[in-house]
Amino acid sequence: TSSSHAAPQGPSVKVDGPPPTGRSRILAAALRLMAEEGIDSASLRKINQQSGLKNASGVQYHFGNRAGLLEALIEQGMTRVDARRRELLDDLEAAAGVDPRDAVRALVKPLADELSSEEGCHYLLILQQLGTRPLLGALDEGSKQVHPGLRRCTRLLQPTLDTLPDDIRRERAAHLARFMLRALGDQARQRHVGRRPRLSDAIFTSNLVDELVSLLRAPLSPETLALCHRG
Image (cartoon, rainbow, N blue to C red; front, side, top):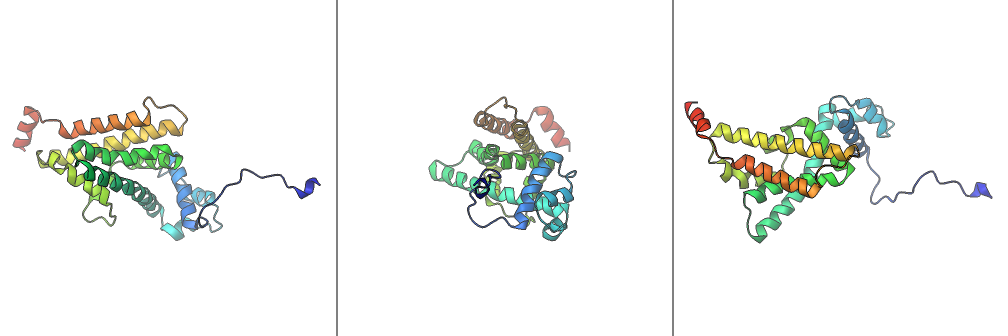
C-alpha cells in the first residue's frame, strides 16, 4: 500500500565521519550569517536558532560572546588555508627555490582557492569585513595563533621590503594585506550573488599576484625619499 512507502522528505545525504558537534553547527551557521548580514549585525540568537541547537545560550556556552565566536571562525579558516600554504611552499622550495613572486603567490593562492566553495566565499567575505586584522594579528610575535606558512611567506618577502624605510615597509605590508583581502572579497561577493566575475578565478588570482608584487617592489620616488629623510 501507499502507506508502506513514505514519500522522501528530501535528497538523502551521505554523512562521512561522526555527526557535527554543537560547536561545529554554531560555527557553520555563524559563517553564513556573518558573511551575509555582517559580523556586527548578525544576531547571535539567530545564529543559535539556525544551528539547530535546543540550548538557547549555545553561542555563549561554546564561545563566550560575539568576539570569541568570530575569533574561532577566523582561526578555523586560517588553519585550513595555512595547511595549503605550507604544502605550496614545500613544493616551491623543493623545486627551484622561492622568488618574491612565488612568495606572494603562496600568500594569495591558498586564500583564492576558497573561491571554489560556498563556505570559502563566506570566509572571504568575513575576512574582507575585518580588513588587515587577521593577517597582521597572526604575524604578531605575541599572537596565540601559530600559522607557519604565513610566517614563512613573511620571512621570504623580508629581503624585498628591507630596502625600504621602516615606516614605508610597514605601510606597504598593511596595504598589501588590505588590497588582497578587498579584492578576494569582491570576487567572492560576485560568486555569492550569482554574478559571473569579470575574470576567471585563475586569471584573477594570477593578476592579483602581479599587482601585489608591483606594490611591494615599486621604487621610491626622489620626492618620497626626500620626505622620509626629513622625518
